[in-house]
Length: 315
Image 1 (cartoon, rainbow, N blue to C red):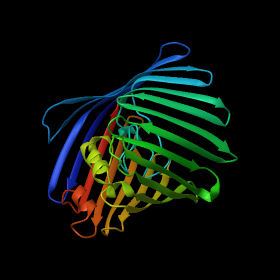
Image 2: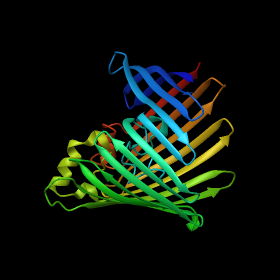
Image 3: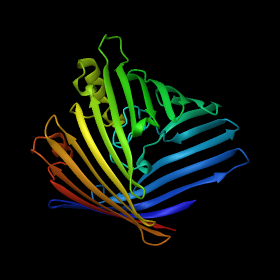
Image 4: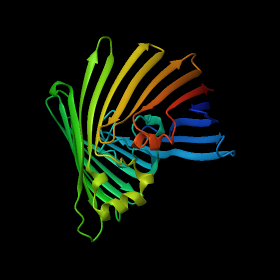
């Protein structure tokens, strides 16, 4: 178990803000096959001016041979993209977000490794039922999946990675779960990953999102459920990322996402430094390029540039 103290400072144009708080993150063994996981956060910010608590993780895990079963509030990582994940539908992340910020849901998750090269996942809870089957052909992993969300949007999808000269991809066909005969839409990703030099990682991804041009029934459902996923207003995105392990204590990442539909672009540089065993620092520099009526400009709320500094201290 570990407890973190977090202090953050954000700046964009003439706007400055701060936030700080505490995170408790740990797991406890309750037996040879049973464990308990907990992660909660207590935070105060300049905007809210009061302490707010969040229970991110609180679940039991049972493992026996090829079977693993989780029950409780947890995050589910689906999809393989570095920037975009069309099949990351259970507890989705926004692009450029860190895995540790993945939201939690109350779920029952069963994973059964049916053989050394095949596995099945079953998920249920919080108005969602999902299943995924994966298998391996040589160095390539392939997965097919289905997600049922009553009254929202249902999905059939796939992903593949491994071998294939660094190519990977995923896609999802989504349609409204209503009586109306609204046509479904496709969301897809094609990416390429290359190791350059001593562990430097280059990522290039193209993302196609036809969901933003959906018919009225599907578009209304998306608009009513924006808290469930990140919704893009354009159809095409091109992203490039370069991750550099500077040394054993420092990692630098340079990323860029462009939208050819409206000419907008967001550039971001992130540096993670571990100063001591108990102290970590993260610095983020972001800038927006393009006209003022682009999607990224609206997401940035009018700021052309921003700086963020986050400090974590582990007790």
